[in-house]
Length: 160
Image (cartoon, rainbow, N blue to C red):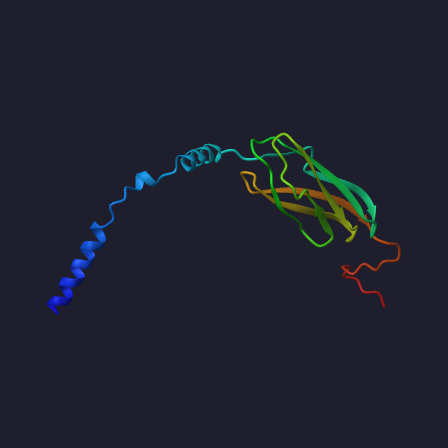
């Protein structure tokens, strides 16, 4: 038993004293410079400056597709990357640029709405991107006239 403990202590002493390399000698100056630049730029974000963040289609007929282009400029200090854009329902479909948008460059997001629903509708598009907030929101609205002869399924009055 004493022999096993002695061997274990000797091995541990050997492990801890055998590392004679100086870690500072292994640091690559190029990597340090790259890390310093990255850290200096870490507070620089792209900014999506939209011409408008909401659009009203006005009065439309039910089932008539609509679309609108939301224009923006990246007024930030780094490239803007849009990861995803989703409508609040399946009737609202956004199309966005897949390539990064450089600082100072313009971009567009096309929002398609299929004209479903009736009466006053409001829909949103949520954009997931690398801005400081991480998400941006656009909205559309319209007053949808139901098709002639369409039954009002929400009416509490039943017709026999």
